[in-house]
Every structure is written in structure tokens, then in C-alpha cells.
Length: 95
Image 1 (cartoon, one colour):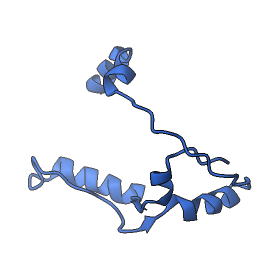
Image 2 (image 1 turned 90 degrees about the vertical axis):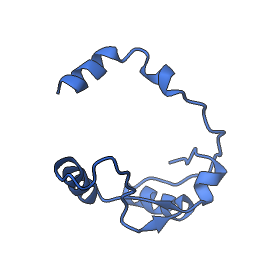
Image 3 (image 1 turned 30 degrees about the horizontal axis):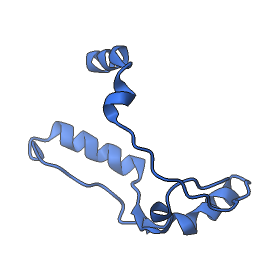
């Protein structure tokens, strides 16, 4: 299992969120008038570094964590990624 992110992402502090916590937040934000027009950052408060977690993940899935290979970040434009997704967006909006 090769980490192909950037050196910054390998060494920086990252956070995560439990899916149940996030789902509860979505329900609250969608059904309670108090959060209207507000923004929120939802996380558990747990932090990690990929350089510490990567070998643990590899071991969990019975894989070998190989050497880190840093890659330059890709320049991705949402406009380019979505240009052929009109039907999917229409389906989502209709849901």
C-alpha cells in the first residue's frame, strides 16, 4: 500500500468525523430553524497524521505499507469533473 499524497499531507495534522455524528448534524441542520444560513465545521476533535496512521491501516487490512512516494497535487477543476454529469445532477435534484 503506497501513500501517494504530498509531503504536506503526510506530515500535517488532519481531523476526521464519525459518520453517525455527521448524519445527526445533517438532520439537525435540515430540520431545525436555528442553523439557517449558518456554516459549521463538524468533527470528533480527534486528530491524526498520515505518517502515523498509514502503517496501522495497512496492518488492519493485512497489506504491506511500502515507501512513501510523494506526488505533486493535481490541479482539478470542478467544472471539468462535472461537465458530462448533467443527467446525474438532474437525478439528484429530482430526488
